[in-house]
Image 1 (cartoon, rainbow, N blue to C red):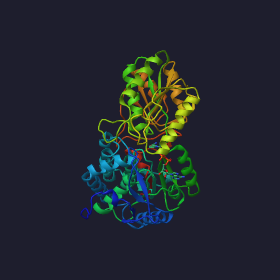
Image 2 (tube, protein in one colour; image 1 turned 180 degrees about the vertical axis):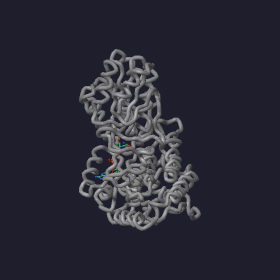
Image 3 (cartoon, rainbow, N blue to C red; image 1 turned 180 degrees about the horizontal axis):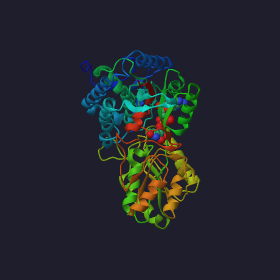
Image 4 (cartoon, rainbow, N blue to C red; image 1 turned 90 degrees about the horizontal axis):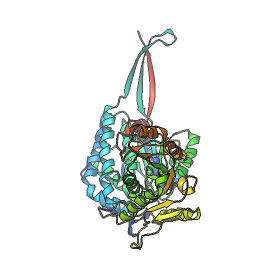
Length: 494
Ligand code: NAD
């Protein structure tokens, strides 16, 4: 390991990591804008198709010609080194992450920064302790005694494509298990949050022993570089997180080379309040859930289903909490709802708010830019009522602090409404009777469910979606196994 050469000054973060070296992008640089201030805060390297070609070539060579995929101890050591090196830069990373992502600073003690860095240790442990060989014992196929075993092997070169909403969490949820499994990686982060990846690239290059080519990072505003990862025959698996629409394109681009496609996509999850729940507490929690990070989370519950006879009471409780918490400066430790990532994203959210009005919905609170914030891509936390589950705002992912409240006529109606969605990513239920809660958990077709405020997030918890929310699971042993092939080996006995 070499000694640290520099701090993570943002003005030095405009490089790609290709084949172990920090190199400029062939396309120059592009600007990074702070979503809370609208100021340009620095540049990132503009990677091109040629840069991506070099990165894929380096990852292929590192996989095919080095011991990386077989040296479990080296992989565990490098991942722990990275965890510790990033930990030593945590205050700088926190500041730069909040500036680039616009995320509330309180989230950086959890999934926006510290959580995913700590989780690298979990994947390092898996590299060391996974059952790489499983003895199946003897059998006599066709009358011949054989000893059989299964060997887990790395799948190969991973093309990782990530979005901007929780960049560290999603980047590390791909890099961590993929590298631990013995794969080599090319990461293409989102154009809105290149620093979160580029700064990690700098730490990898300067402060860890990852062999050249094992991990490559190519920032760019050009989405075609993502498509390149999906089409290039040297890439064995595309690991994609983003919108369902882009996920379809990735899947189709990957089809000609029949590479494995791992997809974490959108959601429109339901928060179900049963009639025996503490309505006020449940609605407050639903409001907090939707405004956290301005609703820019795929697993956020954006449909609130409440007993129809208590709709008015639920609207008052939910709107009250949304209004009380509001939107604010993400550097303030008390802020839960910061700005949206970009002007483009705010326009998209405002388009949905107009659609809600056009469809006959009532904006109970919010629906506008905060009067006290003339700069920053803010939108007030918003509650929409008066629409049913067939409305577009109840069916489509808005990705803003916007909650749609809908009345239900009992537990099974609530389950039906929750399931009446193309998505199946997450959900929540609040109630008192354990049997009724259990029936809802079993009935809702989603990858995760929180009960009475339960938080399922963790390195060891597989996360992913049913239906059009994705294919595969991220995190946990299941997420690690996505990056493995299974080889069956038989040897005649005696
Ligand atoms: P996006 O789909 O626009 O972009 C995601 C990534 O894909 C970016 O890096 C982008 O450059 C790249 N890309 C764009 N077009 C591509 C193409 N044709 N081929 C390959 N790559 C391409 O998503 P976004 O707006 O950055 O993020 C928001 C979306 O991500 C939301 O829909 C959200 O639900 C989803 N998301 C899902 C999860 C999950 O785990 N299920 C987590 C976070 C975000």
